Length: 248
Image 1 (cartoon, rainbow, N blue to C red):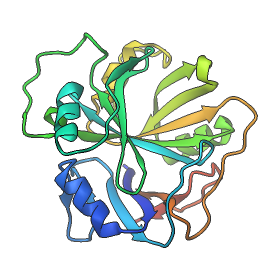
Image 2: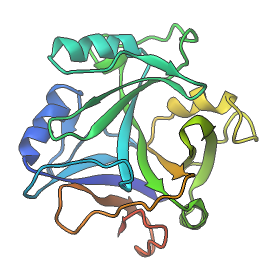
Image 3: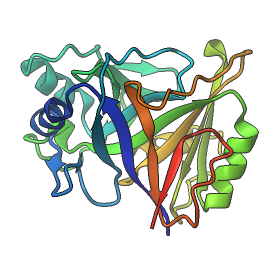
Image 4: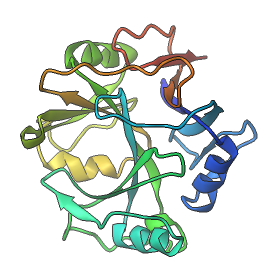
């Protein structure tokens, strides 16, 4: 089965990024220079480039989300390390979450396995970020969901959830390389959402912008998103504009 293998990010100081993700987020540096939590989750590779990353609201790349069993614990751990983290809050019926940035300005979301007030008494390791973080969501943007949906299905991804956020003029679509079945066959069901954040593999989240907007693609060498590597694809055709690189 294919897999989201690596997230590629161009930045000014790759080694500082590696140290931050390992020292503060609990990831491991692998022999090839990438970092991650291992298992079925995607890894990060930071690519040297000049300039300063300046995110825009219509960039094809938005953020990553690290899912944790206890977001208050993660918040306290990061604040103790001197990181400026937003207070955890329940955002509608979407998730219990908080945000901060890495040293180069890339947005990182913390999202709890449970909605506010629903936390289960799971066994966690208090020494790990949030009791045990995993790279849950890679979030990209599109102005046209049809070709994205077609591409994801053609790659063999399974739709896991659809989450309308009408007040903010977007809808979230979630896809993964998995045979898992969501609790409800209705992909808009709220029941699927906590289940989604507990998956131990990286899920592609696509923010479909509903208002008239063009999604900005990064230039070849500018700081920011350089693409995602998907292993097991026959080719790297990317009609969806998500910047996909195939890997054998």
